[in-house]
Structure formats: structure tokens, C-alpha cells
Amino acid sequence: SVEWRRRPFCICFLPEDTDPLLLPWDRFSAWLHCICVVGFDLELGQAVEVIYPHHSKLSEKEKTSICYLSFPDSNSGCLGDTQFCFRFRQASGRKSSLGCFLDQFDRDAPVCLKRDQGHYYGYVYFRQVRDKSLKRGYFQKSLVLISKLPYVTFFHSLLKLVAPEYFEKQEPCLEAACNDIDRWPTPHPGKILVLPIMGTVMKVRIPTCYDKPGTSQLVQSTQVRMRITVADTVPSLPLCRCFHPVFFHIQMLWELVLLGEALVVMAPSPAESSDTVLALVSCISPLRYCSDFRPYFTIHDSEFKEYTTRTQAPPSVILGVTNPFFAKTLQHWPHIIRIGDMKQAGETVKQMKVKKLKNLKTLDSKPGVYSAYKPFLNKDEDIIKQLQKVSGGTRELQKVMEGGTRELQKERYVASLMPLQKNISPWKSPPQLRPFLQEDFMKTLEKAGPQLTSPLKGDWMGLYRQFLRCPNFDGWFRNRRREMMKKLEALHLEAVCEEDLQVRVQQHTEVETVDLVLKLKDKLTQAEREQLPLRPGTLTKLQAHIDSVILSLPDDLQGILHKPSTP
Image (tube, rainbow, N blue to C red; front, side, top):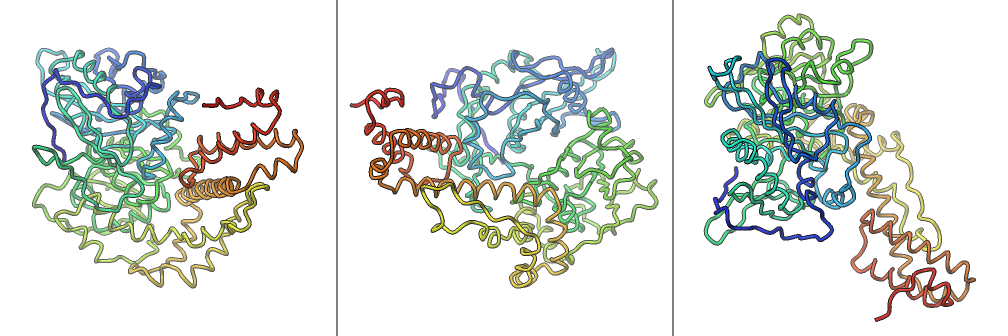
């Protein structure tokens, strides 16, 4: 939940982290790529009417994707206001000038909240109301926020403020909103950010990778206790509502998502489609879902042919769809979830059996799970009971299933791939990590595997073997390998800083000393660029070493090596 405070328009809020290197619109770009207005034209169909800021760049392919994904399918019958989100590929070849600057904020964010490198998210506020003055008989328009950030909860809250104002006051309202956003502090995890927007103050806290699960995010104000919006990848919906009527198969769905299986969610509206897909993707937290996923997917999508072809096996992707045409187009997919209308308050959840993919005509009407998949782990009734609680929402799903996910991250074996610290020499290149060997890893599980400690029982070894072949393990291990390599570089650099470089300089020629200076400068640049996990003061110590070595050289070489200015 979120609360806002109304403020007079004359009050000016300056961002706390004023950075003279940031140019106009850089702050806006740290949060959003652009804001689009998508309308319906009787001759052209859906069309992008306005893009703010006007200098924002979108390829024609990106504009087409935004057009079709910003409107519900005609069969959805969404009257009134509807909010949902979608995700689409970024055009190749475009790089952000803020890339390196924004990377520092991603470092402390949980993996599921890191900036998406190859895709954009579209956060939609769609309005459809009867209007006899229009030829079509309806007013239909969407306000869409395009961003690299997967802050679903936050952007939906922002749209609830901006969109109604826009539909009433039109374009001047968007210009004012964009100017407000360009005064926001940058999205820094762990900080409570004060964000003025159109006469209102929002407070948001982006979680960090160091947060304890389930910690409350409250702040004391001088006058009122305000609840802070927590940037999250999924709206906190009651699970019984989000997964109705497949709620009792949530553990099986967790396995399908974990193993990167091809999965399609058929829902009656984009809101239910996107909520369900996002809940599925987030249920394997703290692992990041590394395959493609589309919270809302249409037949006009540029990847439609790629994802629906029958000439090859379905790809590792989760699709959320609403068009009944997909029941026929995707009937060869191995796992299909058919979601009915969202469960109403007070309605009981009925247990339904998993149906095998035989009589596919039933997909047109009957909700349920259609799959021949046999789970590796036994169904745990305690998990269902925990999630059936009234407060059991999508965040609670993450907490309950987190135990099973953490069992799959065996840090002990991965940590053993690191060389011993005593083998790190300051005058040799850092040693290499040992390779990950699947059979060696499986042998360690026999003596210390989750089958011995986890309350979840079943074929853990079979689940591991399958998991080690899927994109989610590959993505997790690549990330851990990068972290360990950075740690090796950091340990090597700290070892260099502990050496008496003056003694070494005296034992070597000028040419070798110049080479040492150049290498140390490269190390310093690398450490700053990659933000190596160094002990406090290490970079200052390294710079002092570089300065002292340069001062030991003749004046002409000092000039070439940029002699530091003396106080």
C-alpha cells in the first residue's frame, strides 16, 4: 500500500544527490525511457499519438510493439480503467549514455530488480468508456510508461496518480510530470527516495540484496506515519485470486518455472495475464528467471512466428495471452495454464486435477492446468495451508517457496572453486577459478543434499540434474562466477597494496618501473569501473603507491606519467 501527501505547487523539492555531471533529462532517463500516449484511429487502428520527452527515440518496430501491447484484445471487454504491464525486446544497436553511471545502482539491487539489459517494460493505464460523440462509440486511450526497470508496484502506483490527471487535462499534464521526474534523485537501492509528482509527494524504497526477507519499510514523518512504496517486480495480490483455480498446483508450477519449461498462461484480460505471469516469474526468488517472459503477448507481436512455430520445440519462455486464437496456435505447447475470471472476495478455491493435453477443445472454456509433467518433489500440504491464509499474497509465495529455491543454490561447492588466498601472489596474475564439474557437484549432494534437510521430499537428485541443464542455473552460475572473479581481483589488488613497492622499484630497471606504473593505473581504473569489493581505503593506498613510484623516476618520465600536483 502507499500513501501520498498533497503539497502546494509553489514548493520546490531539490534532489538530495545533486550531481553536476548529470545533464538535463538524465534524471528522467534513470527512471524512464519515455512516456507514450496510444490512441485508436478508425483508419490506422492503434497509433502512438504522443511521445514525451519529444527527443526520446523509439524504432518503428518498437512503436508497433507498444501500439498493439498497450490495448487489450477486443474479446477482453475491458470497460473503465485497466492497468497491466508488458515486456518487449529493445531494438539492437542502441546504447544508453548513462550505462556506466546506472550500473553502480544495479550493484546493490536484488537480481530480480536489476535493470533489464535487452528488454523494455511497458506499464499501461488503459481507459475505455462509452462516448456517443465518437464514431466508434467509445473513448479508448492508453498512457504507457516505458522503462528498463522492473518496478511493477511502483510504476502502477505512479500511473494511478498521473493517468487520471492526464485524461482530464491532456498534454500540459504530461509535460509537468516529465519535468517533475527529471528532478527526482536517481534510483538508489536502500535509500528512502522523496519523489515529487504533480503536486504530490511519493516516497519509495528500492530493496537491496542485503535486506532480510519480510522486513517492514516504514518511515516516521514529523506529522504522519507514512507507508513507503516498495519497488517490487510483482503487485502483492492475494494468491487465491491470482492463481484461481490452479492454486493447488502452485508447487508444480514452481518446478516448471524453475526448470525453464515452455509455459503459456491463458487469461480473460491483460491485467490477469500480466499479474499471473509476473507472480510465476517471481516465485523462484531469490533466483532470477533467466529465460524470456511476456506478461502480455498478442498475435501482432514481432516474436509471434518465432514463438508459435511447430518446426521446432517450444522455446524456454512464459507467455501471457488473452486471445482465444492462442488455444489453437499453442496447443502443441507442453504446459498450459487456463485462468478464469479473478476470484471474488469470499469465493472458495476448489481443487482441480491436472489435465493431460488430449482434448484440447476444452481449452476454450475450462480453467485448469493442462500438462503431462510429473513433479520431482512430493506435494507438501503445509505449503498450501500457509498460502491459503487471508494475507497470503505474491510476496508470501516468494517467502514460502524461497526455502526450496535456496536448497538449489549450494554455495559450499561453488565456494570451493575459489583458489586459496595463500596462492594469490601480488607479482603474478590472479589464479583461475576451478571449473564447475557436474558429477563432482552431484557427489557432494549425496552427503549434504537437501534430501537430508529439506521438509520437501521427493527426487531432489533428479530435480538437480534437470536444473543444472536449464537457463536459470546457467544465469545464476554466470553471475556467481563474475562475483568470484571480482573477489579474486580484489584480493590480488589488496595483496599488491600490502607490498613495499619502493624496494621492488630499486631492484628493477626504469623500463620495468614504468611498466609497473602503467599496470597499477590499469588496476586502479578496473577497480573503479567494476566496483571491486575492496577493503575501505584500498584505492587510496593504491593511488599513493602509484604517486610514490612516479616520484622515484626521472623528471622527464614523471611528466609523461602525469606527475600528480603537489600541495
